[in-house]
Image (cartoon, rainbow, N blue to C red; front, side, top):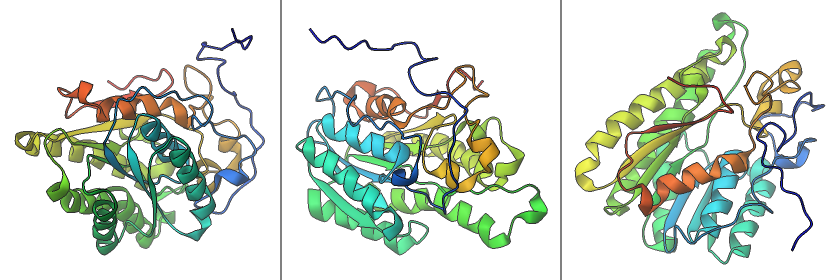
Length: 297
């Protein structure tokens, strides 16, 4: 028997602020994090719940997307890893290595999902490699912090919408012809959809749109037997945080939650697994909060 003691207390299971991070240039990378994130590399145990499935995951190089990719692979799924550019390539290759260690296939696909042609190419690449798409995880997001609305450039507003919500529209349209009854679409929303921070106005606004997109799409695809759900994370420790927020907020990040700490990406993974699994066959149109105790009513 192992002598290791497992901490099951959600208050103390992972690090609490204050942190001592340094600013990163957006979009940020895992390698530059001083306080490392847990994606389940050592802790997530699979149970064959997604055996034989194929997943396309955007933003799978780091953060939540990385944790979902690792979990899906350990549950038996092959994964297309979508990421932005060469700055994220090392993180994306690390994700692919973990997928392959789980005995599954990984395909790397860099590019800008704000571009509709690239979204179509992502779907084509997944279908070419795997023959189908069973799970579409629309996870990648663009976030910046502004003190006032007057500080927000119009092109930044456009960028937030193109990455965070337009890309979902593009990817769903492209993927649907390759999805069969029982397939699942999972969109990453945010607690910001319910409690928007004024400094994250573009990001929070898109997250509210994602909730409505999910609710409407789930009804429209019901007759096809395709389920659509969203996950609404609270503050989660990823490279996006020190690359898009003031350091004073970064170093106290998550302190405002009842658990008094940020969540780790691995703590999101079981929800994404559940929603993608056949056991969730009657769950569609749902928004699942993962917020460290902060209610969304």
